[in-house]
Every structure is written in structure tokens, then in C-alpha cells.
Image (cartoon, rainbow, N blue to C red; front, side, top):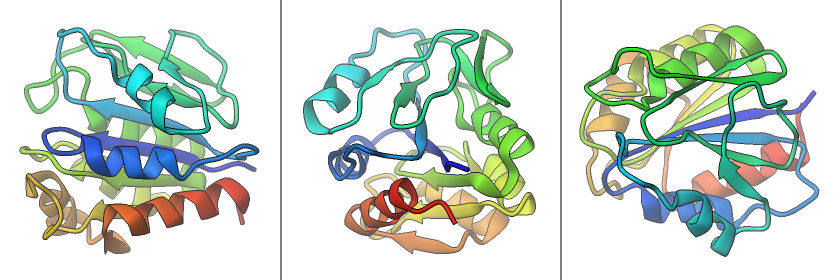
Length: 187
């Protein structure tokens, strides 16, 4: 059984995200799903991630089957949700004033994959990801947040810590180590 790694990022989260993605190599037994607060604006995040990592990154497509060793990015103005084996995109109501938002991804991942989910909340300036992190840990998954001293905008990781008490607050380098461990070993 492979890990499902879900990542929330907003303002200030690109550098730690690059650290994490740069550490990934094939073969990787996990799948990674990323929500960045971009609204409806054009995004080049998959291109930026492809330039720094060993795993292919692309915008997710509605109904796309989930494959190991891939990075899926929520497209502009779409929430990304997971059901067992596939990705769903929708333009439902904004969550925390944004679409895409992390909570829909995190909650749906927890419901579909339970203890296989690793949730990561990086730098950002609202509370998105906190409710989703609580859902992940309630289903037996692992919650990680970026170290508050390192986060350029610590509000998102702080909100997740206050609401759920995730397992660890780690620097970008340590988050990368944990993610790599889940790509190799899915116990």
C-alpha cells in the first residue's frame, strides 16, 4: 500500500516545497498532491517542480487515475479531492476565501485513504489545512507542519498545530527526509 502525501502551501511556501520535491527520486511508492493558493490566476507550479525534482509533476485532471511516483497539482480555480483510485476536480464554494483550498483535499484524502495519508502544511497566511489535518490524524494518518521559525508566513502551520497537534513541526529539509522515507517505505 502506497502513501498518499497531501501538501498545503500558500505565501512563502515555494522554497520548502522545492526542498521536498528536490529530494524525491524514482522509484517512489507514494503519490503527492499539492494545493497552492493561487485562485484563478495562471500557475507554472508543475513546471517549477519538474525543474527541481525527479518525479513528474502536472496539473491534475478530473477523473484521472492515481499513480505512484507522480506529483499532482490542483489547477487554478479548482478544488482537488480524492476518491479511492481517482482525482476529482470541482469549482465548489471557496474555502478560507480561496479555490483551490487544502481542506477539501485533506478531508477527502483522509476519508478515502485513512492511515495511508501524510498531511503537510507549509507557510501561508490563513487557517486552510487545519480542519483537514484534524481529519487526517483522526483517521490514523500522519500530520506534519513546517517549523514556525522557518515559515515566512506561519499562520497556516500554527492554525494546524492549535487545532490538531500534528506529530511534528519540521524544517523544510527535515520534511523532505520524512517524505522520502514514505516514498521508499510504506509501513
